[in-house]
Image (cartoon, rainbow, N blue to C red; front, top):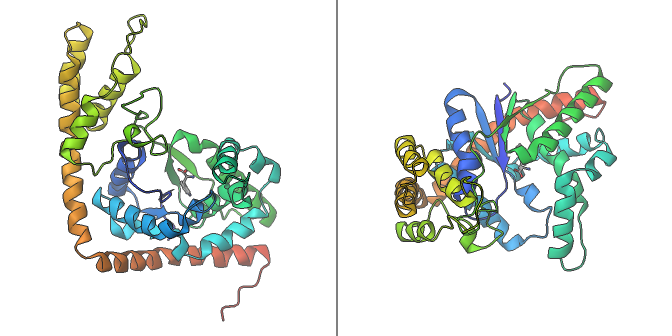
Amino acid sequence: MPKEVLSAIQPTGDMHYGNYFGAVQNWVKLQENYDCAFGVVDYHAMTMPYDHKKLRNNTWELITNLIAVGIEPGNLFIQSLIPEHTELTWILNCFTSYGQLTRMTQFKDKSAKSSEDSGEGFISSGLLNYPVLQAADILLYRPKYVPVGKDQEQHLELTRNIAQRFNAQMGVNYLPVVEALFTPASKIRSTADPTKKMSKSAGEKHYISVFADEARIRKQIRSAVTDTGEINDGAMSEGVDNLFGLLAAAKKMEIHGTLMEDYKNGSLRYADLKEEVANALVEISNGFIAKKQALNVDKKALKEQIKQSSSEIRKIAQETIREVKELSGLMNVRF
Ligand code: TRP
């Protein structure tokens, strides 16, 4: 049985409120109504210069974090535990236009960064093929929906092109033409510089970990940039808008409404807004921290559980690969 919803995330250290409100919170909710699979995609993490001594730890750390914030362990898999991902990638590579890959905006951005980070102008062909691996992640489970951020629109379009080209040549309707489910939450920005999105790569000040302790959250929110002093025709500043955005994402709609009234009639004190945002985040983080501590009591059991769920989810991937090989004229012998 195919999955209804498939998405994935790269294992890059800590989880922050940008990741959580921007994607993972939506996944947690989708689980209530759909049969979902969520992957930690470690093969993708190798496409940029990376530290092989940290990768495996980051993968387990992200798995733990995802469960701590509400993802069902049974819905989780690790990409490199399922060899069909790389197997399908090769096949799909042969149905992917080389020109289209070189035109991907993410490839252009990341190749510049790779070139710089490597210190020797190195750009791996894995980076060029990144979107094909992503298409394989998706098509292996033949889902209907793929919840992603707007920045993944081009990759989803490519996934549809690949599926259509494959289906057209084989004269079948086997690989699904998937639909993107764009995350409803607005982009969370850095509280230290609200012109930038919240991200780890910009440095410590620019993200708030969902596992941060109370003192740290309060400190970061207290020092959030509100008005920069520039006159902007009465429009709300990006910093204030971001704080309201955090309150809304944390589902504090009543407080949000009251404070918005105050803002509109000019009586809002930013200190009060910050206090409420900090309270909301502390409440969320405290729950996550407790859950994570409980999970860390028996790390071995957690790993076993994820190996088990990966092996269960793999069955769908095996079914797809068998059918794809059959259709494409490849050998299907099992030794
Ligand atoms: N490229 C995605 C991102 O950067 C991560 C990803 C990899 C993904 N494989 C996927 C997302 C499959 C959805 C489905 O966010």
